[in-house]
Length: 279
Image 1: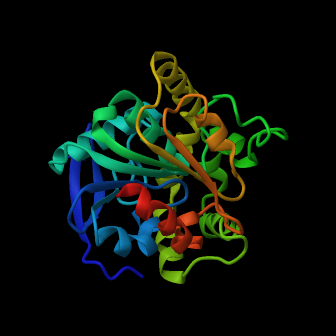
Image 2: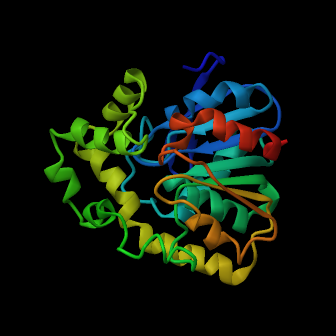
Image 3: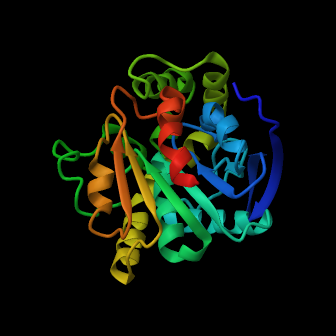
């Protein structure tokens, strides 16, 4: 568990209120989690990062302790949330790390406002329909993409069974190892209830809009921010392959014997990559 002094904030940005954890001092690093996580995804890398950086780790819109918003789950709106968050904390720029659902908004932050993003770390996600992920998608997208995309379905059929559902993702995302009970319980609590499930599913329902936004950004310009793409299982190097044709300065790495939830499953391996990259 983290021993860095963590401060919790309730921050109003872009029409919602976000729960935000901060720690450390120095150049800012913004950490964007995915599904089914909260800011506590970063627990085992937070101390190390906070020794050199001001870490800013929000619960994304609709997730964790943040506002259960009716809309705004597309990558572009999430990117706007994050830029407003930096403004609120007085940070003109930050390095940005995103994983899973946090990756598309991190990418759009760098594409739309490159002066605000010093370094970009993207992990275990795809960027819309950009070419390069054909191998990963050869058998179709993961089954839960379609499940969550159906309006009203997940928040109806999962009600009362949230813990078993979340546990499947946590076990799969650590190759069967699982995560420590305290963090597991926090994740289960964050995704329990029909409103929590609706908001989580809204990320998947907004994916077509996000894909259009990503395509428009790539049509308008290149990714000029130095970028590190980190893969594991199951995404592997698919994200790097998507980024390679559009990025000016890209480093790719796949962590072996690592599940999808990299910061909890292989935190030391992740830190060995990001320490030199961020500095």
